Length: 261
Image (cartoon, helix red, strand yellow):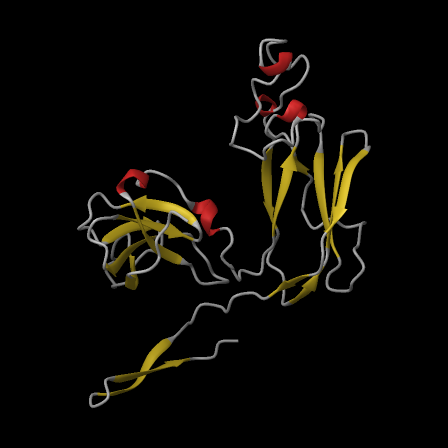
């Protein structure tokens, strides 16, 4: 793993307002935060990731703060992480290394192999069992079919490129490059890339999902079902927090959160 998480502590994030009104209130958009941290690494740069996405890299090894954009999230806390990296990796986005970290958002992310043998008009529908154990294939979870090829330029195939001028005489100028996709899953061993779809927020429970791939004529070219997946949404952000007490002798602070449920 190229990201170094050890030696970094006291990560703090402060919301920055876009301005201040005459009555003292502040507008909420655009949403940015000032992230500060302490690090034992004096010979490395640092990267900040917001909700698993790359937000930026420090300019030198003395910088221990950064302003980053943050999304509006009313259902779950925003996850901000800081990592140390070697200087030669400063401009590399390592978000793929964070994919294995658990994110309790109440959503499920599906990664689908986009093989070049799927037709240009192929679409995906995703179904689920709503916690009953029996997948309902009459009502897809997605509001509209997910297009495999939303941009025709991404689809390689006969007559869609410069015929016989690419690898193995195959029309593949639009295919992903070596090492950039799922190696060996495309025609003639060419790489195939993948697409992702994220479900709406689900309630706590155990679900099974089914996937069907069809073309415009309704022909089903692929299907599959998942094993049971347990969903545990993250707690809602704390609201109306106040200081209940502070003990100077023990340096102990007690916070009180009003129950708004």
